[in-house]
Image 1 (cartoon, rainbow, N blue to C red):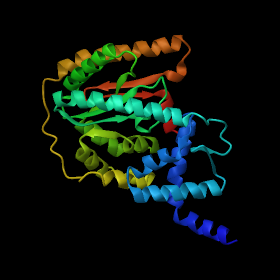
Image 2 (cartoon, one colour; image 1 turned 90 degrees about the vertical axis):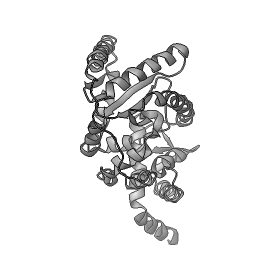
Image 3 (cartoon, one colour; image 1 turned 60 degrees about the vertical axis):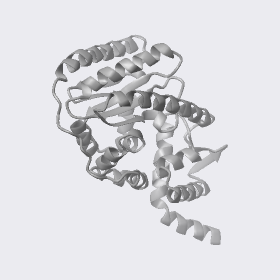
Length: 302
């Protein structure tokens, strides 16, 4: 009886943490793999030991209440089918991909000072990657410089691909100008977008990133712990983003046109092969180049 009373009191105290933990586990299940205890703590705590302890308590309460099961460090929801046995291998692969992606960015960023923020997003930033996954790169550039930056980074990525064909592909999945990114961060109010944004592994521009998060407080209503931890990482001061630059139109016409054609061709090939589950949308405009899989869009509606 005493144990039951303690569990009920603890559950009330940690209810908010439990919901964040469950949301992460659900998102993993929807993608067909499990989370580990360490993964959940890393994603929610972002290095904050106090929050990590709250996560551990919440996980313990959820297990004792029967809402989750833990086997060999992997967490699964009861009644969600067998998706066990994959988490550890996916985490190992994500670490390898992350190391390769960081090396690439650290090598190219000195040649593109127009980049305000750079990082790794997608499955690798979540600490879970499969053999067919790309390394998703995110770039935010000074207004009017996006496509000159894209030209340099795409050429560098192609060079790396030729030199190391067995390594994962660098995918510039989210690249935008300063104004475009700030606008989307403020208005794209879904839990999945918030989760993706809060889990970016920032390589350059941590203060810029913090500044954008502080202007997008709606994310704190989705993931209060993670939001607080990420905001605390930078000083949040105003960042000098410079004025708009000119002369980017030709790069947009050439490179943007090429990428639009390639995206159309890739989707056509996928349809002809009956691989509709791999279709994606490419939003290629003057101030952004954003790729989103149809599966991601479906998850966003859940």
